[in-house]
Structure formats: C-alpha cells, structure tokens
Length: 135
Image (tube, rainbow, N blue to C red; front, top):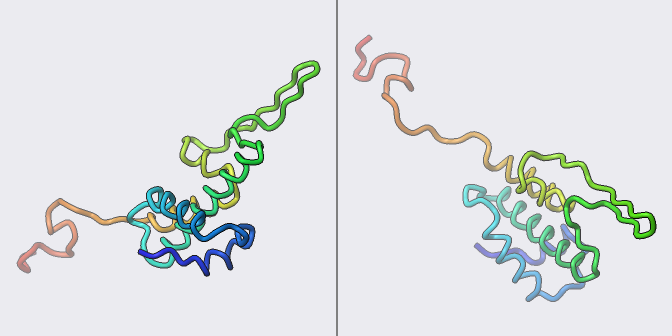
C-alpha cells in the first residue's frame, strides 16, 4: 500500500513544509498502528490521521511542549499542578486524544472496525429452515 503524500499535504496543510522523507518515515510507523482490518478509503484516511498525530506529537516534543496526557499546567511558586480529567477508559484512546488528529484517527478506525464476521455454529442458526430443506 502506497502512502499518498500529495493528498496528505492537502488534508493536513500544517505539515506542508516538512520534507517528504520525514512524512514517509512517520507514515511507515503509522501503518503499524492502524488496524489491518481498516482497508479502502477509510483505512487510508485513518493512516493519514495517525501520521498527522505522530507528526504533531513529534513537533510538540521538539519544541519542548510535550503533551504528557495528564498535566495541563504547572506553577513553580506556591506549587500548583492542574491535571487533565481522563475522558477515556483505556490508554489507547487516551493517547490518541492528545491531538485532534488522533481523535480523528480513532473515529475513523472505530468506523472501519464496526460490525464483524460470524464464524462457527450450526448452519441452521443462519437459515430460516433446517439445512437440506427439512423443517
């Protein structure tokens, strides 16, 4: 599967000044994160959103503004720390919630993975009558 760099630059203009190699390296990491079941246009959109999420986290880390996921603000004189209220039940959703791109990726991956296949059981359970036409 090829990463559509031109489409990524249109959808996420915040990263238009980055080198192609940087975006493609983060896209390779993002491909490992996106669920294998997420295919087609929805899967490509999730892949791009996770790439933007990783790039945003990396950019924040380089500027020294590392989103820890829990601390909103800290004061040194008369020590004061404000914590972010956790809005999700698991670390995965919490990590993706650190950027708007991650929230978009989570929504896209949830849309891709809804439903599922059924395996096992008797064939009669999936039919209106018994298999072979006998009632």
